[in-house]
Image 1: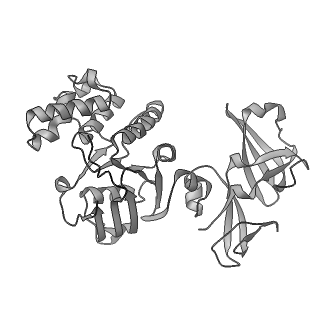
Image 2 (image 1 turned 120 degrees about the vertical axis):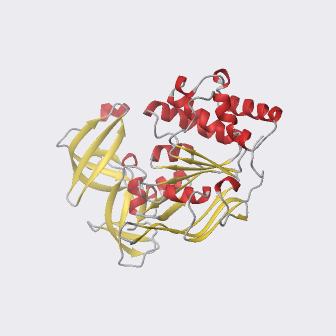
Length: 365
């Protein structure tokens, strides 16, 4: 019982979408800057970026709550144009649950069906299905004030899903929950999406949420879509400095492109890493802290790239130890499992830091 087309084609397509707003001085501000994006049917897709990057505005244009200044939006091949929100095959879940406090859970879930004049017998079956789907069947007669934040979020999801939309849009829906409940709901949301098979387009500024739940992620910054790929590719092979830095902790090694297959680090070392930038271009090589290994000076394997340095800080995090390594031409952060405590380094130790070139990526910007 879902709103998918059961196909493998595009569910949502944005072509050259622009959104400009006028500020109080009469100056136009570009919130979304020529976005091209295709979200596939049945996909869990996340728009990830900092506040003000344009991700919520993009979602609102798909929902019909904002109209694009330029470009087109299609849902399952149909041009949305000026079609109002209630005529689009989507439903939206916001961070504020907006439940009716005087109505029961069941009444809140069925409100949209009632407005659409769905027959009472059919309405009951759909309400029961949606409430059971979010595991709230035992609380169908409670009021929102009798529910926790996580339970209210489940009701909001059921209310959106009961209409069997072709696409479910979610705007920071877990933002009001505490950390532990938010992490629990991440897994529940992903499992729910797999069960119903509906396309989810999810907006968040939380990297963990995006990586945990998404089939693909689009990283946005200043109205532009910088990179679209799987969570693993976004994390391991970012294409810009902003993406590498935003998606998690990383180290940047300043470099210059020597050729399409080689870069030269600031200390003169050469690395075989591919780049699409012209020879002589300034770039950076990004390496995640957990991809680096700390050795006693001179004991690193010969098949890894090595940098000599000295331990400046040691931070114990419970499940990991983070070393701050000072190098003549830069500073490195290295994250090691705490289980390797027997091989722990101390402040002042001379060390060799190594990594495999396959675990590094060239970024621009």
